[in-house]
Length: 258
Image (cartoon, rainbow, N blue to C red; front, side):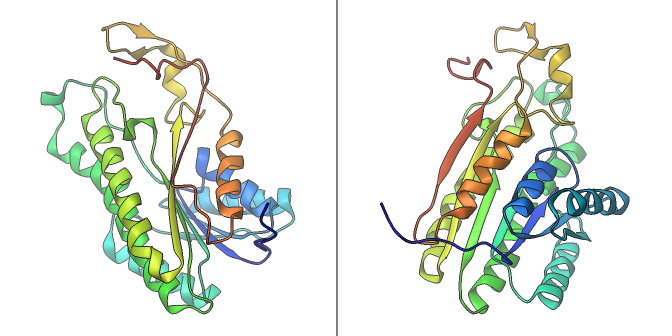
C-alpha cells in the first residue's frame, strides 16, 4: 500500500449546481472532509441559503458565487472572482445539468435542445477550460476535475436524445481532459450516477418510460452515497485517478436495459 497521503485541509473546491440535490450533498461532504468549498449556480437566494446551512452543519465556511455555466461571459467572471478571492483551485466538480421533456425526438424543440447542450456540455467544457487555465498557472501546479456523467453516458432512456447526447459527449470530454491535463498534473474523472434522489428524479415514483413502452416506478438512492464517492475520488493524490465510476440504485433497470 502506498504511504502517500493527500492533505485536503484548506484546499479549494468549486461545485457547480451546488445549491441543491447531488451538488449540495457533494458540497456538504467535501466541506466536512476539510475542503474549502465554493458552490455556484444561477439562483442567488438558493446559493446563499445552502452556503449558510452547510457552513453551520460542517463547521467550515462554504462560500458561493452566482454564475450560469452555459454562458461564457458568466463563467469567465466566475473564475476571475475565484482567482481573486481564493488564489487557486484544487478541485472542480462539474455537476450542474438539466434534463429534457420526455417527448418523442421529433417533438423536441431546438430551443430545448440548445438549453440542454448549454447546461450539460458547454458548461462542463467552459468550466474545465477555466480550471485548466488556473491549475496550470498556480503553484503547486495541478488539480482534479470530477464530471457528473450519468448512466446515460453509456445507455439511454426513451425520449432522452438531448440529455443522452450531452452525457455521451461528457464521457469523451472527460477522457480528453484526462489526457490533455496529464503533463500539468491535472487529473480528470467521471462519476456516472443512476437514480440519485433529487429534483430531477422526483418524477420516478410516478413512473418512468421503459424501452418496452411501459411506465415503471424506479428505485432511487440517497445522494449522500454519490457525495461519499466524490470525496473518495477527490482524496486521492494526483498521481492516482478514478477515470470512471458508476454508482446506482441496485434494483434500477439499467443492467440489461433495452
